[in-house]
Length: 340
Image 1: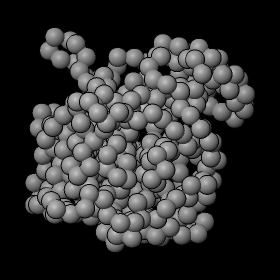
Image 2: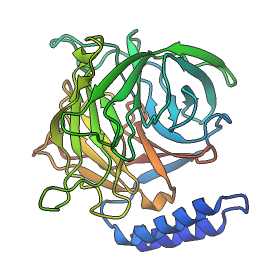
Image 3: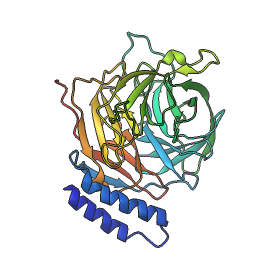
Image 4: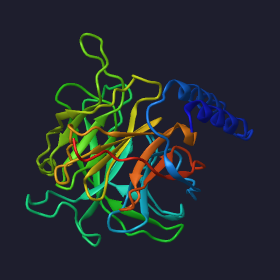
């Protein structure tokens, strides 16, 4: 689908929004449709499947998503800022599989969720644990900072709960890691956990160099050893930058990231694109010499579209948007060639 046809299709969809939709949603959706024409990067996703989300009333702002590596077909998500500290589960059909209150945590600006090991892995360990591995943990990122003013941020870690029936309510207990950046505060919505336990954080918004040129998204790393390493905030060291330049096109801001189950691919989402990078299967670092592939998500017509997760080992991707009535999408996007 061309970007022009995508914009027309989206405008038609906006026209069908019921009277109950807020003026803000209609205004933002119209702005999104206009931006589609201006941004042509990437091929359209293939094999698009729309999944109705049977969301609980407590899920008001779906701001991040991740897929379980030990419970096939189970998906976890969280609310955005200012909501209660809750962890939600769904299955791949969109059905409710429980909610858990996260004790020992506070939702200031939760923006990211990722699955990973519960601690450091030996250097000679297999890159990816077996599906039955008992140490699967969920990392909940209180990493948002719209005005880039907060001196420290927090990541919470909980043992992955077992999915339950619809209507189930439980609790999980979190441990917390407070951290800071070495230069200044950054706004982050994309976080992923490497097989070795390192946490990676990708900046969201427009950054400018001293000469006023736009800078690419920066990548910061917290090593697994930072957990339980004293009361002082850990320092997330800058280790890379991506070939995504926030602000270089409308809606090009980084909103989520997901590492594939085999650790070899990293999906990084903006509002209108999905970039897939090749990565090292143990350290999780991006292979900079390999050009990423790009998928244009504008034809899906959802705003704000924020979350991304791999659908198990199928090679397909799950995409989510804010709002209880917003569906999930399962899509196929091209992956980078592994030969530089």
